[in-house]
Image (tube, rainbow, N blue to C red; front, side):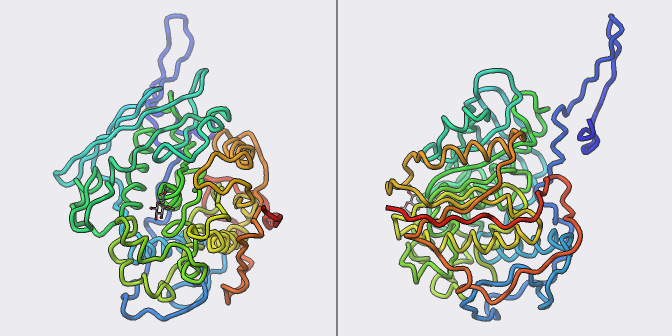
Length: 434
Ligand code: MCU
C-alpha cells in the first residue's frame, strides 16, 4: 500500500450496493514510481568538444567529474550518472530524446500497441506478448529479435515475453543519412542518433504504455530486457538508458555492446570501424573515434555503471574472439566497482564460463541464473547474490586498464525505487573452460 503513494493516482472510492468499499484506481500498478532518467534535472556543465579531448589508454574514472574532482557521496551518483549519460549520447550513441508529447497505446495478453506523436509528427509500432499461463499481472521481459534468449526459461520463471522487433523502430540496411523506422519518422531520417539508441527509445515508449495501462495484464514496474548479438548491443543500451528497467541481460553483444572500446583492437575483436560501418548502430559522432578509442571520454564500463544499482546479468561467449569477450569482462569488472561503491555489488552477474561455442546458442549454464535474476528483480521473491563466472579463455584484468581506485562513498543512494543490497564484492570464480 505504501507503494501507492509514489505516483499521483486518480482514485475513486465507491460504495457498492452491498456496502463494501471498492477502490478503483486508474493506475493500478502505480507501484511504478518509474522515472526513465532520475538525473534529468541535474545541472551538467558544458561538455568538451570532440577536438579537445585528451588521449588516455586507460579507462576513464567513472567517479570523476568534469572539473577533475571526484564524487564523495552515494547521493552524488545521480548527477554523475547524468554526466556519463550526456557524454555517452554526445560521443557514442547519439541523443535519446525525452518522452514525446503524446504516448498512447494498448496492452493485452497477446499484444502491445504504441502510438507516439511529437511536434506534429507521429508514428506507431506494436509487439506481440507471450504470457505464462495463469492470471497476471505479470512482469515482462522485452526480448529483442526473437533469437538467442531462453524464452521458455523466462516464462517458466513467471515473466511474460514481449517480442520486440527493433527494426520497426530503427531499420537496418539504410545509410546514415536516411535512417528509417518509428523513431526516425519522428526525429528525422538524418538524425545523428544511432539504431541502438532508437531501439532504446522504443522500449521506453513500451514502458510508458505499460505504466499507463493500469498494470492489470503486464506490470508497469517490473520490466527486463534481453537479446543476443546485435540485439545484445541493443539490450545493453536499452537497460543503461531507462532506469525503469529492473533487469538488463545482454547476450554475446560484441563490438558496440558490452566490450570496452579501448580493448577491442588489442583483443582482435570486430574492429570499431567495422561495427560502425556495418549498420548505423552507433551514433554518427562515433565515426571520429573508431581509430582512436583512447580519445573517448567514456567507455562501456560506465554504461555498465549506468545500470547500477539495478539488476544486470551479462552473458558472454569466450570461444569467439570476434565478440571481444575479454574486453567485455573488463567492462563488467570496471562497472562492478561502481556497483560496489553504491553498496550494490550483489546486483551484477557476469557469465562467460560456458561450453558450447556456437554464437547465440541456447545454453544450459545460463538458465538457472536467468531464472534467479528474474525472481530477484522482476518477481521480487528471490535474493540470489550476483557473481562472476569468467572463463579463463577470455579473462580480462581490470588492474591493467585503470589508474583510479574505488572510493568509499558516504551515505545512501538517492534512488528510492530500487533496493540496494549490502555492500559486498561480487564473488569471483574463474574456472577453466574447454
Ligand atoms: C555480435 O553482433 C553482430 C556483429 O557485430 C556483426 O558483425 C555480425 O554481422 O552480426 C552479429 C549478429 O548480430 O549476429 C546475429
